[in-house]
Image 1 (cartoon, rainbow, N blue to C red):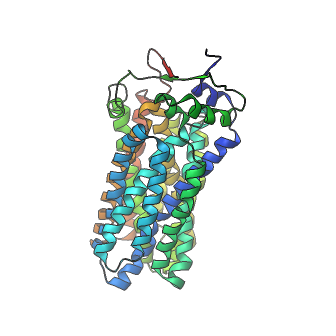
Image 2 (spheres, helix red, strand yellow):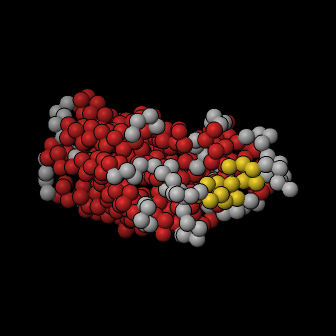
Image 3 (cartoon, rainbow, N blue to C red):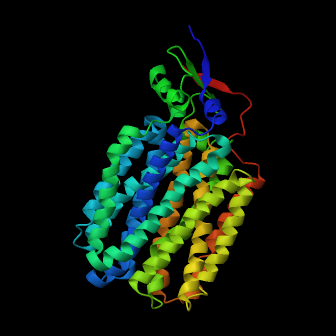
Length: 452
């Protein structure tokens, strides 16, 4: 006989964030920080490869784009898998995978090997980020979801900034191989911790009709004393039964919003990866040292850490589309200003910090926007496809950066042109918001309780 019924969505939404949820948030932050550290390594290593191996900008573009191709494929494949197998198993395997291949990359002997190794690394990196975002969103109260997700995703810029500061010391003293070794060891050390402490999404378990005991063990940690052996666990649904995750993402209810998310994130990642990958080379090209270039890039990444927190805080308090759109517009202005401050190293650092605050912060907010938009049954797929389409923009950015350098464009002209994607992203977000595609909480006419 059923003694009580628990709606896990209501349970999470109506209670303050507990210690168990904070542990999940911390673990998500660590994974995203490892992701950010690894993804940006090549930007710091690129100038050294030019000197040591005598490779040109186009060959460096191949290395950077190989990782981005892997990121794209990893993101596109991992979302449907996570909606089928679970978020936890995909996250843990992806961290192990990119850790191993980053270690292997440290032993590259030529550019061809590095291209292949970075592609393999990218597969794991691409799978980790969207699924961490999905898992965190499903443990966060909806009224605080944007802020919680951005707290976790500011781990990316934290990790990227940490990579910059590490590169500024390790490369001059130990060489680029040592930096890659560090980037490979750190995720492998974290895998046992994730296996032991990271839970599966309780919302996912309810939709998949997992055992009462498995769900109850997690619910007890969220709300001690609230369950017994006969408790029934439910979750409101917004989708027709039997629909696959990808069918939901491209259904009439979600199609327009999905396209706007894809367009916005495509342009956003084009710009952010262009800056993250080529900023050290561009700055070094105006006469700064390797260490100075690394510090400028680290400031750009560090700005995103603070920007992420402010963005998430704003999205929970005002219209999230307006908040993100305005921040992207400011990011476009600061991108333009980078090109106008080449003569002043201190000012260049300040503007790079402000640019990172806006662009990286707003990019983190895009993860919250997609998590709000899609239902549990398709959240991993929707978020990972936004990431996958965005990674295509990141791939093109690698070639765009190499081409702009090959054309000999001036520092100011380059940054005037690459401010344009931020404007397009702002427009896509404003249009999505204006059309009323605001949140996942926009419920279908009926709610069907799923549970055991």
